[in-house]
Amino acid sequence: MNFAPAFGNLSLAPALTAALMLQGCAVLEGLKSGRTDPQVSRAKEQHAAFRAQPGWRKKTYRNENLITKAAEAHKAVEISLREQRGLLLVDHAIAMDFPVATGRSSHPTPKGSYKILEKKKDYASNLYGRMVSGDGSTVVSDADTRAHSVPAGGRFVGAPMPYWMRMTPTGVGMHVGHVPGHRPASHGCIRLKRETATELFALLNVGTPVKVDSFSAALGGPVGVDSVVIGEVADKPRRTKTAAKRQPAAAPEGAPASPATATNPAAAVPETSTAPAPGAPTEPPAIDGAVAAPAPVVAPVDAVPNASLAPVIPAALVEPAPPVPALSPVPATP
Image: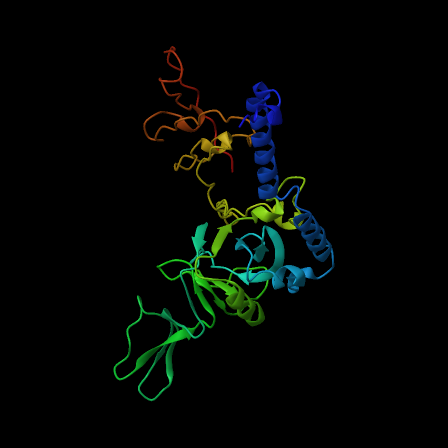
């Protein structure tokens, strides 16, 4: 059979094939990014309206239409460390926005891409908990099995972690716990409120991806036209600890001057410990900021006649000069 009339000019087939492939790639890319998916666009608008409400940080956002489809749809979780919030994505659209409590600075929750490895409704930590004595009293309330030993006749009671969803083999996961709100509080896990944990436990499966980062990628990150991250968190500067400059203690009144410092050259001239001889002329006080001249060296009284009136200048400061003639004795004053 001859199929040429049905296709017309077969020379256009390669160009038509390439055009269809490019169009298909564009559609797939658009669906992947969510730009052409009306469901994702509507979900973004509804979620933005939720965050525009006062006091939204204490609430949990739910898109019931997306949650009902979550069982058969693609699901993912994103955790924002800076916002202390979590997102449930259903087919790349925001279905839930809930508060979390991640690890404190001493036990930070590690960033990365994970998957749920196991789920246990009733679970207890094998690292953190309480050390209990033989009579049942608590010996250590915040015990770490790596740092504390079980008392004689006692036992270790692991901290309860209901609705446990493990993310790493080393013990990081999501579970029910105290969520104080907008601040880290855990030993590295991601704490959830009970109602959030029970809902996620029912929706998520082993293998569901979990992304932990500073900001949620679904919200556009800290900057960008698609970002709805609140400004007071995104623009909050990081606190840096700076050591306070230690200032020298003020000397008590009448005490000798302190040693020289780099910022006050005038203070760099040390004072002589030799007291002036009786009747010797005194130096005028130095002007603030001026560099004082070197103090003259006073010779012993019994070495030079009339030593109180004839100071000796160090030879290292001036060129040699003729000796100073002796002065006639000055009569003593009463």
